[in-house]
Image 1 (cartoon, rainbow, N blue to C red):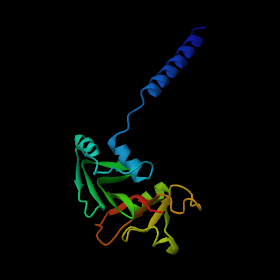
Image 2 (cartoon, rainbow, N blue to C red; image 1 turned 45 degrees about the horizontal axis):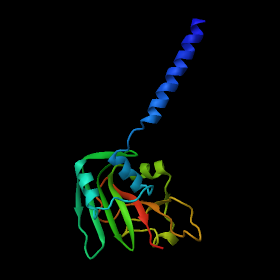
Image 3 (tube, rainbow, N blue to C red; image 1 turned 120 degrees about the vertical axis):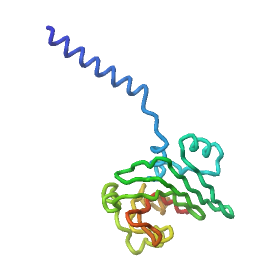
Image 4 (cartoon, rainbow, N blue to C red; image 1 turned 30 degrees about the vertical axis):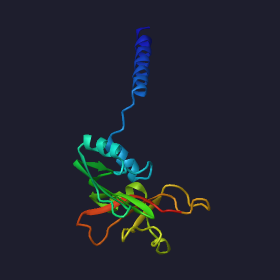
Length: 177
């Protein structure tokens, strides 16, 4: 009889702890929000909004708004680098004109990163569409290509001539339809 009560009490305790965890979910960190934006799951941070800039500064993220002629050109510098899928990120950039690219300057093994998120090499016929500058080595669509959505948001990964050894870029490419 005692064993039944112990088992029952243990189950009740576990269910109670699960309810407490569900009732008080861990708030997303700013790093989690950046990760979601880099993987096209939420909108990019826009430093043209004063409230966004103030919020980021509260988290020791320096914001540079280098906007020229109405084009988006922003940098976000993290006082403490954060980790996304085994790569380190301390700078995120947001560039936009006709479409945009919200991307991290990452340090780590690009090939392992590509494999971990299931990205694929960009075929030659898509290199012009799926590129930002010369960053066009790997991609992962976030939605199927359809007639209504011929250019879904895409995680774009690669290097260009300015990339330092051990670094690469990855982030969310949005093409204006």
